[in-house]
Length: 115
Length: 110
Image (cartoon, rainbow over all chains, first blue to last red; front, side, top):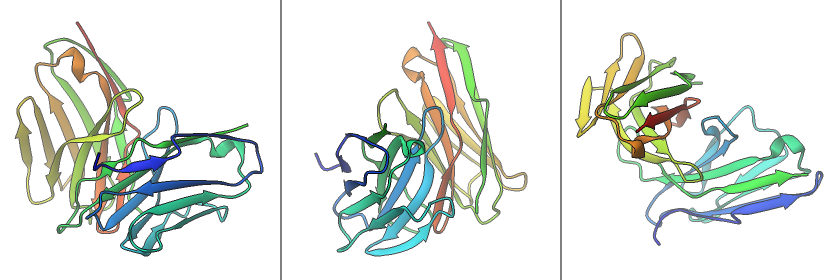
């Protein structure tokens, strides 16, 4: 499968614990996005990378969230001191920049449940 | 930042009827408007998109229209089929950002 892959698919954790999600984009894609999706809502933008550079981060993102893409390939999203409100599906998407806009290819998501 | 509003939140149609979903955006710099379909438990997938230099685009039973002056764009599905049932998201893209609407849950009744 040469699509976007995310790991783990499901994570259950206790409040206060740290969690880390990994995303492997389509290999030639230079843009990588993280979104959060809760039930009945559209994907909410968190952050995005072009190659290894983090170019934008949502103002809604607290300091407990951090993302990296160290070599411009895979990315990790870490949530520290998780809260129940962090429970959501975390979606990763990648795209190949070709002028304005570009199709996002989404992964299957990592579902986080904070107890 | 960009703000995208989508209506209606739910839509139920009879098989064979048409369905229309509308979105508005706030940032006049938005230049790319994709529509994604998300079936239950699956990832969002692109179904059609339109760029700001085009007013309408069709792909078989699906069409999208864009009114840049009014800052709104719409998805039209004709001859709906039960397999069209899903949640549909519009999005608006500016050079460094892609924002999604809240989604429309479309149900096509046989």
